[in-house]
Image (tube, rainbow, N blue to C red):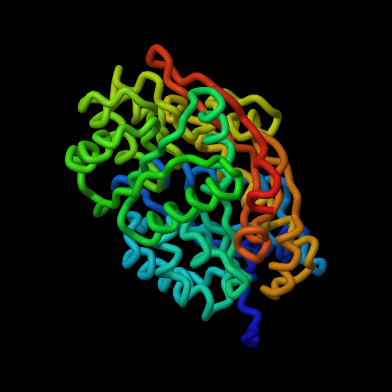
Length: 397
């Protein structure tokens, strides 16, 4: 392991000159810097905007409680937000600025392709990285001990959702549409892995891949529909693409189920697909806060952002800063190896239940967050909750 030079941003942020008390100087807390790399613009912005907002609210929660202590010193979080537009080259550009100019020592990024592009920088600088990303074993493996995956896990989503759809709708044949990049290819492998591991015995048709940015899926869908699949699932498509695939499949006369698995935006689905969204299965969480933690997040959200932009996707990222804070308090150190060792054993409560780290069964290292998975459907133009379920044992842990 490379020699670690302590470069945590322990920058004093508040020094109060107590003139009335005789001129004493009281330096309150120091700051620890974390970079948030996500898509604030472009087709993936329905992911990126809620991610950035939720993470900022989460950092505020830790800071509002007084921060945290490491070796007797009080620290607070300082978050930097970068718009990578879900473009790997932009992600690398932003990561360079974050590390060498803004002096971050922790990071979180959206998108497997963006994380993969940044891995050389992350590894070289010993950055503890907790990402919302796919990318399979190329992102998560024993050679990357400082890289964690902070999302439900596509394998977990498949394990819960496909069991439900097999039991409920008798699904036997599945067709997949994925972007033609590392994220999409990893998703194809994830579906095969779960099908075999959970013994679902689905007939998986060859995946269709496309270049990100296209809007006309008629040729792809025409080929898929001709094979008469019971289910078309949208893999790692961005939210806009998921809605377009759903709409265009139904326009072509497809009568089977469409599963938008990877955090679609329900409001966008209804706006784009309209009545054609009826019966679609969405991998999103319930909008209504149902637990004290969910209600706390919602209350914090309303103080800063419009109520009509709220949706269940905000639950996913909530708790990341709290999780890392617990690891730092446990490690009582900023040394990456110690922080990573402490982080993998953290168990904490999220908006929908317990969260912990797993993934050893698949990745060979405990770096995949495990959290309950939710499913919704569209009925009469409204989002209806189907289930929220823990990850079945044996799939990831």
